[in-house]
Image (cartoon, rainbow, N blue to C red; front, side):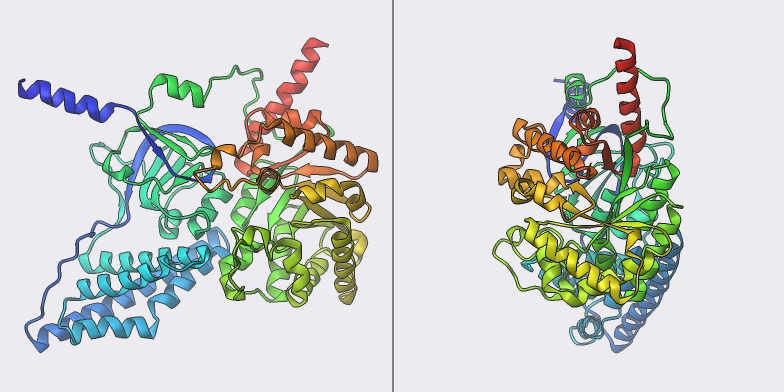
Length: 560
């Protein structure tokens, strides 16, 4: 066999379709070329022994210089993120600066340099690497994800010491697209990467490492970018410019997908309307936005969302890594209300527990946190936190009327207690409670069974389909062994949704849905047909969902 033939065979092998499995960070399906991002080009750090006190002094000076440079970089990033995204998101980098200047960690690095007489690159790599591995082993997902922050600090220091500039690899490409209209493949999705990209143009993310509760994953989800993580060894196969297909619903990634695979996952549907971005919803139907941060609220306004159907208030707490004061919460809520310029905003009360632990609360480890101290239970057990949030929201309602809903309500008795406690705290700041509408989330089967009684205590209801599916079918969608049974198309689920729609109409209390299934292709019209005319999705999905609903009306008109 000649060399040319062997080269052709190798090229063909490289072009064959390969399938990878990972963890769905955000749903969605997309086919696009790849942009490779290298956040760490120094995997192998050389260990050197210093020969003299002079060399030790030089290495310590280099370390101090790297610390000063990296601190200034983090200050600049913090200022930029505060301006472009928001204060809460900037707290990510404030936290990293605190870690960077931790006295105990710095002393360990200096001891390796001066005591063991090792070069600064090796000392940084070893000490921070040890911290990173220790955090990765912690039996708390949120704290385990903080290893990402330590890893990013380690890379930042080493980049300065090695005089490297992490970024897009662009191998074999004449020009760099910098992620625009491409899928970014990286070892890990870090906050520093995200703030240096034009996220409005990125089509998707695929990473080898990183979990569902990392800061960067939260940002990716909030912007509606399809993302899959935990795709092991994909960097060993993918190259810049390769075609990649992401199925974020199933956590699958296809490298060099064949035509049949593309057609099966992203079927081509006929275009029925000439409109590509409808700016208004049909009468009687609301297409609302889910939001976690100010950048997403801005995006909701840019697509003229009918309002915010779900504002996840816990993300503000999570970003600060502490409990925000009443004044901080009040300022944050007012800013969101003002940004929406009179359109309705639905604030979900602090929803922690399960996949959203708050480590600064020092919650005792539970054997099964998904069935434990979370949602409404947590709120009722923490009157100080509950009361502070209610007072901030009640004061904010003086700017414009708001809606407030409670997560993980289990029955009418619990809802009555939540309602009473809310009203008492709101009274303490003399709020005009006619400007506040109270709602409950239907996320567990017991709430569905008690829906008629729960509606007696609320002004509106909202279906949290992610948890409703999980609890109805006893399936963890993040567990690869059973995630295939997480099925938004299950007939029993649609029977439950239909039942809630009937009760909503009979009681005269509005009902919306805000889970991920609401944004699935073709789902909006089915929801409207069963009596759920208010649909809340990622802001990026609003134009497509509106078009689907407009097509429905045109089809009905055409067949009338």
